Image (cartoon, rainbow, N blue to C red; front, side, top):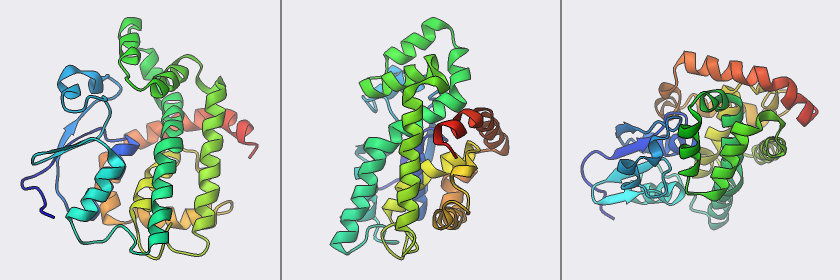
Length: 270
């Protein structure tokens, strides 16, 4: 299969989980990309100029040669087909099945829950500071009904929303299952990193950035904690995720999470 020529253009947002996993995969493959930032908090994903590239109004979008790639999961597998080394999909059929189960769980369950947690804890203040008309236009422009509903809940109800509690429990279940999977192996589906790890880790790292470290600590989930530390040291992770976040941004996220921790602790009964 012929790899497209030229430098790919990546339309993304630095702290978007979907953007992070695509950047991580590109970095693992040694692909250099051209940044085009889409400011989600200002609603740039809904501007007509971007919607012409990605009609769904979401990030990321990878434009490489003649191809406009808007679905992250299939794009990750396409990259692994285009670029042979390093291999990011296990050859064993059962392991590949398990990899796709992790990806499906993130896409369908964890991603929306993670977005709700992030916007409730760290984005709500900025969104509520927008003029009411601008905020309503932004919310109404979201084409996905589920995402629109959850974003509105984050803005209007915040930490008190039942959906926020449910989102926390979604993550608790994910953390338990990740820790269990890592009890007998170095990575989620084998002895080397795969698209499963690349897909899952941004959502767990988000909890760390938000200062929700008691959910991840070595005492509670030792195998997960060691896996997260090991992956965080990978050069591709540093390039794709750590380098896109300043120390000030991480501190701001952590402060927001610490302000919310009393409520979170009572919900999770930690």
